[in-house]
Length: 168
Image 1: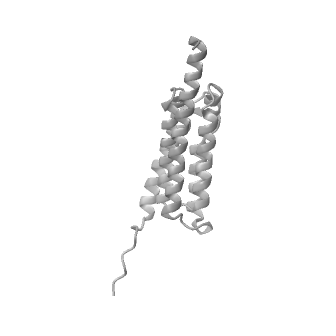
Image 2: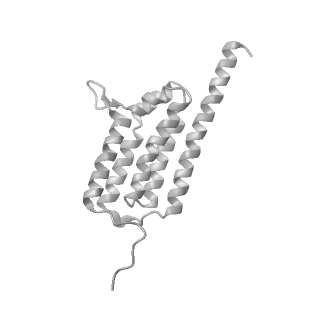
Image 3: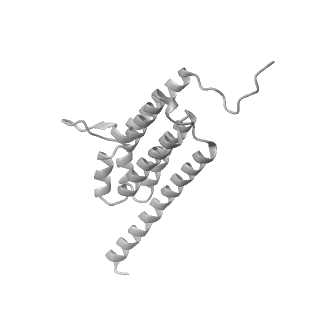
């Protein structure tokens, strides 16, 4: 008698290793791609994107959400995905503050923290059940709303600044 087909294909350890390696690279590019000489810190694409008015922080949230999507595919628990989303939310909300937010983005490496959370989960997968599809959908919808909110906030701030400079 054959086994009933599983809803999702099983992911072998080689595939997990390849995905994790790719996610580590994405995290490094986003958080610490360019090392700061004489320190353990670095500047990644995320703080650089944050310098772009309106769309930079939006792109940063979307790129960070990719790590969450892959973590869900790797079987991360609801708790792990929630912590990852909180890290991205803190990064996005504090990152929208002009100048200070960009400095904060250099120090707060949300993607690196999210990779550590994922690695810990993969080492000890029995600590939490795999998140269900609805939970993942809600998390991703929340991140999309956050990204849109960042854009709206940036537009409002730019409009206020232009109004103050022009006098209208």
